[in-house]
Image: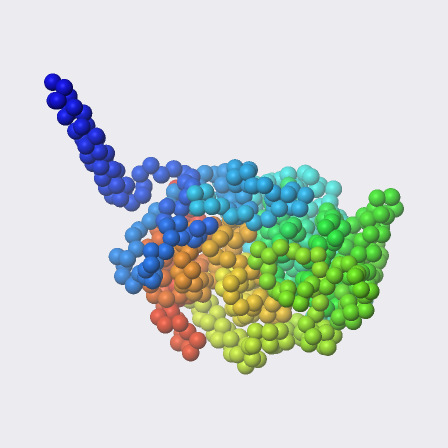
Length: 616
């Protein structure tokens, strides 16, 4: 009996192991056969198909194969994929600026340094693998230029700023719409009058802020709902309106819904994602920034971004109030900017405007040991992605010092005139001009393909996901649009050329989410973006979800890439609620990649309940 009992016990582990194997096989067959549908919830963490560390890098590591994730272009290379819909509470999700993520992961951040408003992207297990739904009642946005002054409340159902800023005319709750009278914290009676006053202080001709085309790019720090930037546009001046996702968390969302250029960012510990000497004017109106902290490091970041002879317009109580604390701040700030070689251009009507020097003479004449010091010679002022700020002055390159300025043409000639900084990249004027001409032809072709689907006011907010010299945006000069030019963080520093053309943009890594709200762009242009991701081992599926997140319903995508990429994307159209508009071979040119094709897609206006509306 004892022998039989021992034998029976010894067989039990084998039997249990066999049962476990059978169960696992059945589960595998079940989930494989259901194409991932079984057990999916409205919200799923962890992108199941991801191959990357971080937001879009390889989780499983390199398997040693050089095979493209897009395969050979065979329709059988890629399986169909469906995506669940995110929970309604995530309808405004910004993955790399998600405060819930910070709380849940217990990141140790210095709130005094605004680190909690900087980018912190989710790890693989916390990535969202779902479609961001529009809010209930969402409508196709009001068209520009009407949208500058009025938007649908259902699209951004937040009215707290209308109540909190009711005495400052930021915005007005008007039933099913929200109105923007053009006011701000320091310009209750309208941004237009305030802008004219700044131009008057600077003695610009006819009180026009563009200074006969010499003032084109502006950085508006702590921009609110961006009425300042919105009213600059009529003077052919374009502003990068900047604000964090803070207690006024929907301010940038309102700006973009209005059709005004804007970006989520903060003066914290990292450099802003813009190259040196990009802006003719920086502006801060009651932006609640402590400019004296950390040896003036935030003011020195503005200094890095201003062109030679650039201005900083500062409207704040410190500039005019007479209480003891404001006078102390004003005294210390005045001493700091004097050591930075800034001078007061004008101080009037509660606003002070400082001007930056045109060359290095003042920096070189400062007494030895003066703080802030000059940045070290090895510092690259155009290296910005994830780079920590330093409390130092960025001096001018020797050629710019000798020229006594940036050497840029006035707007609009600036758009097509080869800028001096092309020499930094060893690019000739001939190459620049050929690039401009090539993209004009390409954009003309795009619009011919889009024409059956669009009207003159259909498209307003545009993003070029790989902008190079900005020639795609330059080719749109006759359209009533603005373009966010994204330049890869690991490529040539061409963003400074884009700013020198009078355009705007940001450095970015498409292995991560962009710093914007959902549903903020009408058109995305992706020229070889997917092929570039493939080379880096990042997830193309994650990029598709990110593009869907930032694209407005009824918006368009132009993919210009190799044939296998186009076939890959086609497999996801139904899952993403996208529809193909057309696919054609790209125009032939010496610069064109092999097998390059153009694929135009339109995003449907679908409802959170699962239905869709006609987007035509």
